[in-house]
Length: 219
Image (tube, rainbow, N blue to C red; front, side, top):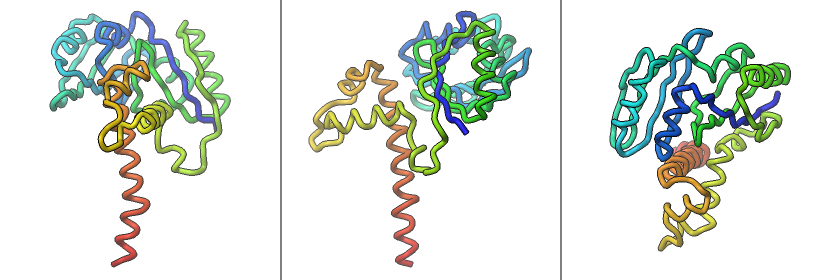
């Protein structure tokens, strides 16, 4: 059963292409999607110090028929958006490929990870081609049997290892978050978000696999 990672170019007419172009420093994560041929609903997490201009920009688009602000705390905002033209999601729907969420939108591209049959993966490629949507396949590989191999995404692994190599976790620190992010060619906000999620995933795994087990053994 193949696991694939694709970097899909978002069509120019899509609302999220417009948003990622106008606000390149904002971290956009699609944390849930629901789609049909005629409409699409997205649950979107936005990380930016000032989300108001971005939110206003989305609300004013003609293809956005419904907009709800669900949650706001510090620099994180979660909104639900309904659109009449889900250009990016229709090929996925027609190919019958479950789209793994959350996924990031970076530089007018969506980074997808999918696990499906070879036939459906091939059909997804054909559907994207038919819709005129460009994409690059970063890898296709067998789904790993070891859960630890699935802990981090490639991006999370890259940022975490770069931070460690550059002395970010040394005492005193050998590098700052800004320096780590610049070396990877990403914004500080993106670096912070990816690193925070990687650290949280690794810490949760260590607690569940090691510390929790040790406590139970003592009891």
